Image (cartoon, rainbow, N blue to C red; front, side, top):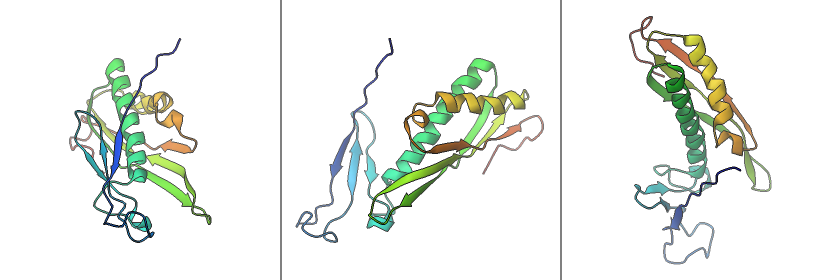
Length: 164
């Protein structure tokens, strides 16, 4: 029997400029993403859709969720396998295609984790990315391609921390 976990979030629109959604250009896309006991995330839509570039948009949050989930699965696997990770940074990128009817969908996300490990098995460290991808709850839940292009450095060979 599988275990179920529930997650809740409140998304509260704060973009009413006085006339609600009376016109498409008459309201802001600003909203707050809240969960009990956590910092609030200031959200909006992508600037291409009249949003505020200074706020997180749902597309960025989706890419960040994929990168974060992969990172957490990977670090767990490394700890279990005795691979000591000292630096992990991922500059993930998502591609969304917008259709003529105004709909759209993600077609691809590429994770680009740059990892530094202590002297050890760099090949194992690289292979664990494949296992992490297979375990990532978020990647398993989306219907588009999620790729992983890891770069592994070993402290013994390169004392500089991984940087993108």
